[in-house]
Amino acid sequence: MTRTVSISPFKDQKPGTSGLRKKVPVFQAPGYTEAFIQSIFDSLEGFEGKTLVIGGDGRFYNRDVIQTALRMAAANGFGRVLVGQGGILSTPAASHMIRKYKAFGGLILSASHNPGGPTEDFGIKYNISNGGPAPETITDAIYARTQVIDRYLIADFADVDLDALGTFEGGGMTIEVVDPVADYAALMETLFDFDAIRALVAGGFRIAFDAMHAVTGPYAREILVRRLGVDPAAVLNATPLEDFGGHHPDPNLVHAKQLYDLMMSPEAPDFGAASDGDGDRNLIIGRGVFVTPSDSLAMLAANAHLAPGYKDGLKGIARSMPTSGAADRVAAKLGVEMHETPTGWKFFGNLLDASRCTICGEESAGTGSDHVREKDGLWAVLLWLNILAVRKQSVMEIVEDHWAEYGRTYYSRHDFEAIDTDQANQLISALEGKLDSLAGHQVGSLTIEKADSFTYHDPVDGSVSRNQGIRIFFEGGSRLVFRLSGTGTSGATLRIYMERHEHDPARQGEETQAALAPVIEAAEALAGIRKWTGRDAPTVIT
Ligand code: VG1
Ligand code: CO
Image: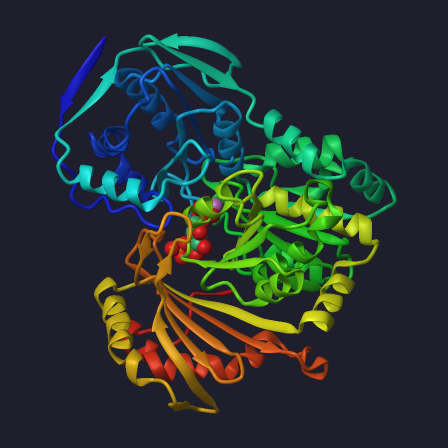
């Protein structure tokens, strides 16, 4: 039986960089989750009888929302739902499943790197049939729908046993509970030389992988331990927990500090990596060397041809605007297209679908390729391992070789989290107001070359996305970027991105924050961060 339930619209449902993220109690308010899911379905056309993929990162409230989503998918007319066992699907595995089974789309339940638990964060995003995040045309339609929605459709059937693999029926719809790992692991075997990595591991190469009590635990156990022979003890925090053990499943130098400290210690294994809540990010640390995500993108692009899946080379490289220019130098050398997109993976989808690029990345620890339409944490780990197995060098040697060839791009991001939203907006408006007059100005030891607000013109569909961050370019190749986060759930988060390119080998060994000091000082001088945020220092430095 299907019911139509009346509700009133929720005026504050503005989806951010990747779907809707709010505190769990907000999602628990009567009708809230339903209103958002119905707004998604109401914004889509032609899914009658088609397949929907559903899965999440296992955080608190995941199972409840899956049961609701199953009943609503049935009531709205989907023919079949594929749901990961235990309600689990990493974001890249969900993307692959949508593509492999030619699903109409998918619901991914995750707030990614944000903390989980009864008073922490939850999130819902919709992915389209290419496996990637819904483009702005669809997210705008979903948002518009949330402003006027007045009912949702739901079928009445008992909870589905998400722990048992098998096929069930509910509300006239087929529900298949599937292995969340198998298809994904098989895909990885097609891209990488598992024999070479197995031989590397058998030869004594040691790894530490931190799953941060999030979704990649089961994937790492199957792929790294069972298929590649890595010591089970090398997979840290491998059991997914609803509250991620009370931590932020955010693979950066603050939240993955345990791994960082291990990699900098005398007992460090050869290779350290971590992933985030939903498995789409990666952190790479070699023994004694942290690889910035922007550098990792450049290094993976420069070496990708060493893995079987990329042996024919790259069609192009894409990076989000705040990501450093390190990858641009690789693209120039390879003679392939380089694309600069706004933050968020959805902008890469068109480029990948049109074969305009093969590898994409973001400074926020996201790297991926045309194998799916999401960033992919374990994929990046496996590509690094494949490269290490072929080059038979340490991470440090690969990093130093890269800097010697392309120069080093010092890079850091400073986040001011949970600041007052009005003050944050005023800081940005004040900067925008003076952009046109900045060229030629001296800020400390730096001279501004040009400044703008980033506008993206999608080369595939011609769409235009404005106000994607403020860019300040300095003479000599340093750059400063300001933007507000679209994924935070408390107040606003101001992100400031700094980089400086250094070609002189004698000046490539500086500590990052010291190397960037003039750019960091320019940020304060230009934006008055202390004044607007009331903060003396960032909450997170990566
Ligand atoms: C952040 C990152 C961005 C990433 C997004 C989603 O967005 O900066 O690069 O694509 O999170 O990643 P924002 O708007 O907060 O800067 V995930 O792993 O949270 O889905
Ligand atoms: Co994520």
